[in-house]
Image (cartoon, rainbow, N blue to C red; front, side, top):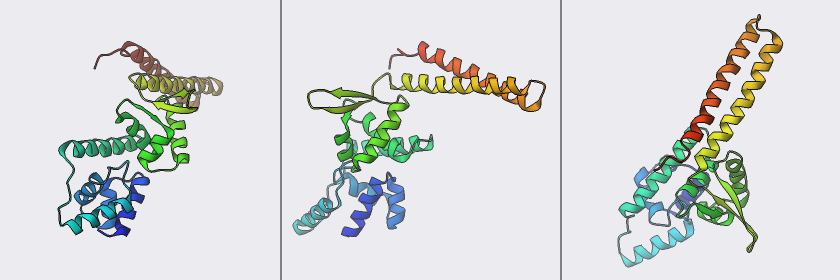
Length: 220
């Protein structure tokens, strides 16, 4: 594999592309990309120049490259699959990478600098992603007063808070829609359509809020 190939792999990882996408761009098997990334720090710590130097050293020694172990492959597969799932559910790819990076970290706590280094992306990209995730309740922000830095945390209540925020937003939309229907008149097609849609949104959002409270302390 050439130095340029490795630079293109790093660029693809920084853009949040899957191994399959990167492989198609390089016209190589997906397994080749997975093996290359896995034996050179993984998707969060892949450095093209370092990988190229390591390959050169292996070639000089005449020793075969070490393939990632079963645990490494499992983590890589889980990470890639989770990011693709999150993107399929509507999250921007960089936001999905940050969220999954936090979920798969040892204690679910990382600083912006750790996220930036681990995902090999700019601090500005991390700032955008954590801002979105915090607003949606998927992560929370803690302040480290001693080191004057923010720590981003994903914990057992993340899905509860996210569900409640989404349900409340839907409930607000339902109230506006119902009011619009009333204003236009229930004796008109548009008024009836809006009122009925608002009532539907109201019911499902109230159900979601009640369900979130009921199952908040569900054991694993």
